[in-house]
Length: 116
Length: 112
Image 1 (cartoon, helix red, strand yellow):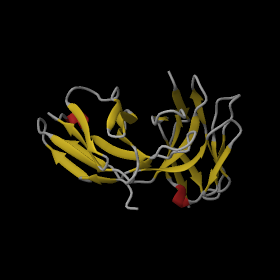
Image 2 (cartoon, chains in turn cyan, red):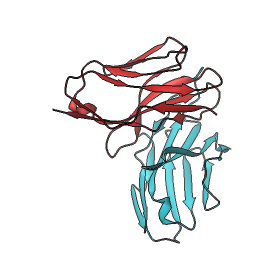
Image 3 (tube, chains in turn purple, brown):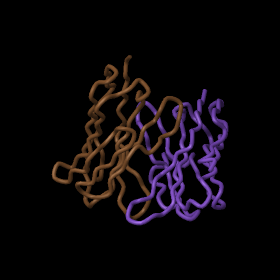
Image 4 (cartoon, chains in turn orange, brown):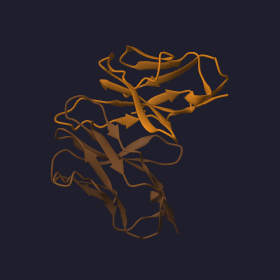
């Protein structure tokens, strides 16, 4: 299996621009997660989906952030407009429902975002 | 609320030294516990897990035991290698739903 695929791997943009991060989960997985990692705040869960439906978006920092999952094999995280404080590594992860906590989250390689 | 606390890093050890990274948790129920590892420039990978009290997870020479009485899940390895240099994350998750709660991560640096 190819694992979780994220694109782009690196993104440099200017403040105010729209940024779209993409994720392809492992085929057959029914959970998808978006995380953000910074030195100051560590690893934060932004939002997660189950069967393409958003379950918990309480970690989304503000209205500038939005996430969609139009089908089981694709998700996007959009920032509009972007700000320098959004600079971070954004990870996507997926998992498959198993019995009694057996499921494992598999992480993608991350997208390194720098907003100037 | 539920939370995970790890010992602060960085932890610097010489090759073949014994490793302990402390992890304690606060939870209202009976979560599953995990250790993830992040090598430089990569995403997180599951290292080991335990789903109930007294379970021991182990992988690649690392092990951790789910201690309900002390709400702990300390990571240990008897002899570390330079290739173990990474950031280690402790996490918990309830059996229902998929949300992981991570600790802040502990950086390990192993010197030859």
